[in-house]
Length: 232
Image (cartoon, rainbow, N blue to C red; front, side, top):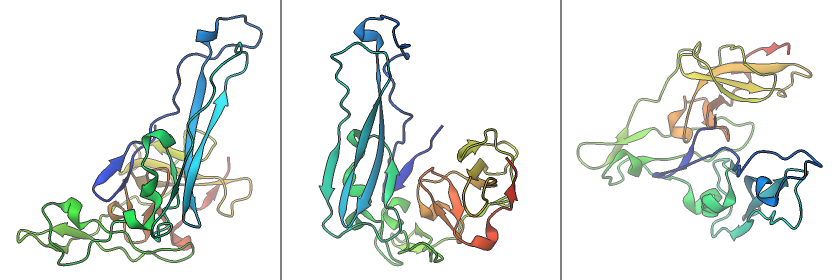
Protein backbone atom coordinates (compact mmCIF):
# COMPACT_ATOMS: atom_id res chain seq x y z
CA UNK A 1 0.00 0.00 0.00
CA UNK A 2 1.32 3.40 -0.91
CA UNK A 3 0.28 6.60 0.76
CA UNK A 4 -0.17 10.10 -0.66
CA UNK A 5 2.17 12.98 -1.26
CA UNK A 6 1.00 16.52 -1.12
CA UNK A 7 2.19 19.90 -2.16
CA UNK A 8 0.60 23.09 -0.90
CA UNK A 9 -3.06 22.68 -0.12
CA UNK A 10 -3.56 19.61 -2.29
CA UNK A 11 -2.74 15.99 -1.74
CA UNK A 12 -1.77 13.78 -4.65
CA UNK A 13 -3.00 10.17 -4.75
CA UNK A 14 -0.28 7.58 -5.22
CA UNK A 15 -2.20 4.57 -6.58
CA UNK A 16 -0.99 1.03 -7.06
CA UNK A 17 0.08 0.09 -10.63
CA UNK A 18 -2.89 0.19 -12.96
CA UNK A 19 -3.96 -3.34 -13.82
CA UNK A 20 -6.70 -4.10 -16.33
CA UNK A 21 -6.73 -7.88 -15.93
CA UNK A 22 -4.85 -11.05 -15.04
CA UNK A 23 -1.53 -12.10 -16.59
CA UNK A 24 -1.72 -14.43 -19.58
CA UNK A 25 0.93 -17.19 -19.70
CA UNK A 26 2.95 -17.28 -22.94
CA UNK A 27 1.39 -19.63 -25.48
CA UNK A 28 -1.90 -19.86 -23.65
CA UNK A 29 -3.84 -18.78 -26.75
CA UNK A 30 -6.14 -16.52 -24.77
CA UNK A 31 -8.10 -13.75 -26.57
CA UNK A 32 -6.67 -10.25 -26.77
CA UNK A 33 -9.04 -8.85 -24.16
CA UNK A 34 -7.48 -11.16 -21.54
CA UNK A 35 -4.14 -9.41 -21.96
CA UNK A 36 -3.26 -6.32 -20.00
CA UNK A 37 -0.70 -3.58 -19.68
CA UNK A 38 0.69 -2.29 -16.38
CA UNK A 39 1.44 1.42 -16.49
CA UNK A 40 3.96 2.63 -13.94
CA UNK A 41 4.82 6.29 -13.51
CA UNK A 42 7.92 7.88 -12.06
CA UNK A 43 8.20 11.63 -12.52
CA UNK A 44 11.52 13.42 -12.27
CA UNK A 45 12.67 17.02 -12.50
CA UNK A 46 16.14 17.67 -13.95
CA UNK A 47 17.44 21.12 -14.91
CA UNK A 48 13.95 22.60 -14.76
CA UNK A 49 12.37 19.95 -16.99
CA UNK A 50 9.82 17.45 -15.63
CA UNK A 51 9.34 14.16 -17.46
CA UNK A 52 8.45 10.53 -16.80
CA UNK A 53 6.25 7.55 -17.40
CA UNK A 54 6.77 4.15 -18.99
CA UNK A 55 4.97 0.89 -19.65
CA UNK A 56 5.41 -2.83 -18.97
CA UNK A 57 3.50 -5.31 -21.11
CA UNK A 58 2.69 -8.77 -19.74
CA UNK A 59 4.14 -11.41 -22.13
CA UNK A 60 1.95 -13.88 -23.97
CA UNK A 61 -0.50 -11.38 -25.41
CA UNK A 62 -1.70 -11.58 -28.98
CA UNK A 63 -0.86 -8.62 -31.19
CA UNK A 64 -1.75 -5.99 -32.15
CA UNK A 65 -2.07 -4.60 -28.63
CA UNK A 66 -2.18 -0.94 -27.65
CA UNK A 67 0.60 -0.92 -25.06
CA UNK A 68 1.30 2.79 -24.86
CA UNK A 69 1.23 4.51 -21.46
CA UNK A 70 1.01 8.27 -21.67
CA UNK A 71 4.22 10.27 -21.19
CA UNK A 72 4.32 14.02 -20.65
CA UNK A 73 6.91 16.78 -20.38
CA UNK A 74 6.76 20.15 -18.64
CA UNK A 75 9.14 23.13 -18.43
CA UNK A 76 9.20 24.80 -15.00
CA UNK A 77 8.99 28.59 -14.82
CA UNK A 78 11.21 28.77 -11.71
CA UNK A 79 13.22 25.57 -12.10
CA UNK A 80 13.01 22.37 -10.07
CA UNK A 81 11.87 22.54 -6.46
CA UNK A 82 14.51 23.61 -3.94
CA UNK A 83 13.22 21.44 -1.11
CA UNK A 84 14.58 18.24 -2.63
CA UNK A 85 11.22 17.07 -3.98
CA UNK A 86 12.59 16.12 -7.39
CA UNK A 87 10.80 12.84 -8.04
CA UNK A 88 7.38 11.34 -7.48
CA UNK A 89 5.88 7.90 -7.97
CA UNK A 90 2.54 8.28 -9.72
CA UNK A 91 1.00 7.71 -13.16
CA UNK A 92 1.85 10.83 -15.15
CA UNK A 93 -1.69 11.16 -16.46
CA UNK A 94 -3.04 11.62 -12.91
CA UNK A 95 -0.40 14.00 -11.52
CA UNK A 96 0.14 17.67 -12.43
CA UNK A 97 3.78 17.78 -13.51
CA UNK A 98 4.10 21.35 -12.21
CA UNK A 99 4.08 19.93 -8.66
CA UNK A 100 7.80 19.18 -9.05
CA UNK A 101 8.56 22.81 -9.96
CA UNK A 102 9.74 25.51 -7.56
CA UNK A 103 6.65 27.61 -8.31
CA UNK A 104 4.59 24.85 -6.62
CA UNK A 105 6.70 24.60 -3.46
CA UNK A 106 4.69 25.69 -0.38
CA UNK A 107 6.37 28.88 0.91
CA UNK A 108 4.13 30.35 3.60
CA UNK A 109 5.80 32.62 6.16
CA UNK A 110 5.05 33.66 9.71
CA UNK A 111 2.34 36.36 9.71
CA UNK A 112 0.93 35.56 6.27
CA UNK A 113 -2.85 35.94 5.96
CA UNK A 114 -4.71 32.64 6.10
CA UNK A 115 -8.16 31.09 6.13
CA UNK A 116 -7.05 27.58 7.11
CA UNK A 117 -3.92 25.62 8.00
CA UNK A 118 -3.49 24.80 4.32
CA UNK A 119 -2.54 28.44 3.73
CA UNK A 120 0.37 28.09 6.18
CA UNK A 121 2.20 25.17 4.58
CA UNK A 122 5.91 25.58 3.99
CA UNK A 123 8.81 23.33 3.02
CA UNK A 124 12.42 24.30 3.60
CA UNK A 125 15.09 24.72 0.94
CA UNK A 126 17.14 21.53 1.25
CA UNK A 127 19.95 19.60 -0.42
CA UNK A 128 21.26 16.07 0.30
CA UNK A 129 23.67 15.98 3.23
CA UNK A 130 22.13 18.99 4.97
CA UNK A 131 19.57 19.21 7.76
CA UNK A 132 16.20 20.72 6.81
CA UNK A 133 15.16 23.85 8.68
CA UNK A 134 11.42 23.31 8.74
CA UNK A 135 8.94 26.07 9.47
CA UNK A 136 5.98 24.71 11.43
CA UNK A 137 2.99 27.00 11.08
CA UNK A 138 -0.78 26.92 11.54
CA UNK A 139 -3.56 29.40 10.91
CA UNK A 140 -4.17 31.42 14.07
CA UNK A 141 -7.45 32.83 15.37
CA UNK A 142 -6.59 36.27 13.98
CA UNK A 143 -6.33 34.95 10.43
CA UNK A 144 -2.55 34.94 10.25
CA UNK A 145 0.03 32.12 10.23
CA UNK A 146 1.51 31.46 13.67
CA UNK A 147 4.11 29.02 15.00
CA UNK A 148 2.97 25.55 16.03
CA UNK A 149 4.72 22.66 17.78
CA UNK A 150 6.52 20.25 15.44
CA UNK A 151 5.17 16.69 15.21
CA UNK A 152 6.88 13.97 17.22
CA UNK A 153 6.90 10.17 17.31
CA UNK A 154 8.35 8.31 20.34
CA UNK A 155 9.42 5.35 18.17
CA UNK A 156 10.83 7.39 15.29
CA UNK A 157 13.68 5.46 13.60
CA UNK A 158 13.84 2.82 16.34
CA UNK A 159 14.51 -0.64 14.79
CA UNK A 160 11.55 -2.57 13.38
CA UNK A 161 11.18 -5.95 11.66
CA UNK A 162 10.12 -5.71 8.01
CA UNK A 163 7.67 -8.29 6.65
CA UNK A 164 9.64 -8.63 3.40
CA UNK A 165 13.32 -8.68 2.52
CA UNK A 166 13.13 -5.65 0.28
CA UNK A 167 13.14 -1.88 0.49
CA UNK A 168 9.88 -0.04 1.04
CA UNK A 169 7.45 1.21 3.64
CA UNK A 170 5.23 -1.35 5.37
CA UNK A 171 2.41 -1.01 7.87
CA UNK A 172 3.59 -2.18 11.30
CA UNK A 173 1.37 -2.24 14.38
CA UNK A 174 4.45 -2.62 16.60
CA UNK A 175 5.52 0.94 15.71
CA UNK A 176 3.71 3.81 17.42
CA UNK A 177 3.43 5.60 14.08
CA UNK A 178 2.16 2.49 12.33
CA UNK A 179 4.89 2.18 9.68
CA UNK A 180 8.23 0.42 9.20
CA UNK A 181 10.69 2.03 6.73
CA UNK A 182 13.24 -0.26 5.08
CA UNK A 183 16.30 0.51 2.97
CA UNK A 184 18.80 -2.00 1.62
CA UNK A 185 21.53 0.53 0.91
CA UNK A 186 22.67 3.37 3.18
CA UNK A 187 26.06 1.74 3.79
CA UNK A 188 24.78 -1.67 4.89
CA UNK A 189 26.27 -3.81 2.07
CA UNK A 190 24.12 -6.97 1.92
CA UNK A 191 22.12 -5.98 4.97
CA UNK A 192 19.30 -3.49 5.57
CA UNK A 193 18.19 -0.65 7.83
CA UNK A 194 14.63 -0.69 9.17
CA UNK A 195 13.14 1.95 11.45
CA UNK A 196 9.71 2.90 12.76
CA UNK A 197 8.18 5.99 11.23
CA UNK A 198 4.92 7.78 10.42
CA UNK A 199 3.00 8.42 7.22
CA UNK A 200 3.23 11.89 5.69
CA UNK A 201 2.03 14.00 2.81
CA UNK A 202 4.88 16.50 3.00
CA UNK A 203 7.75 17.70 5.20
CA UNK A 204 5.60 19.68 7.64
CA UNK A 205 4.19 16.41 8.99
CA UNK A 206 7.66 15.10 9.92
CA UNK A 207 9.89 15.67 12.98
CA UNK A 208 12.52 18.44 12.73
CA UNK A 209 15.33 16.11 11.59
CA UNK A 210 13.24 14.34 8.93
CA UNK A 211 11.77 14.75 5.48
CA UNK A 212 8.80 13.12 3.77
CA UNK A 213 10.36 10.79 1.23
CA UNK A 214 8.87 9.48 -2.01
CA UNK A 215 7.30 6.47 -0.23
CA UNK A 216 5.12 8.81 1.82
CA UNK A 217 6.81 8.24 5.20
CA UNK A 218 9.11 10.43 7.30
CA UNK A 219 12.82 9.58 7.11
CA UNK A 220 15.60 11.22 9.11
CA UNK A 221 18.31 13.21 7.34
CA UNK A 222 20.75 12.81 10.24
CA UNK A 223 23.06 9.83 9.68
CA UNK A 224 23.51 9.23 13.41
CA UNK A 225 19.75 8.71 13.75
CA UNK A 226 19.49 5.92 11.18
CA UNK A 227 18.62 2.51 12.63
CA UNK A 228 21.52 0.06 12.83
CA UNK A 229 22.19 -2.37 9.98
CA UNK A 230 20.48 -5.74 10.36
CA UNK A 231 20.90 -9.03 8.53
CA UNK A 232 18.47 -10.06 5.84
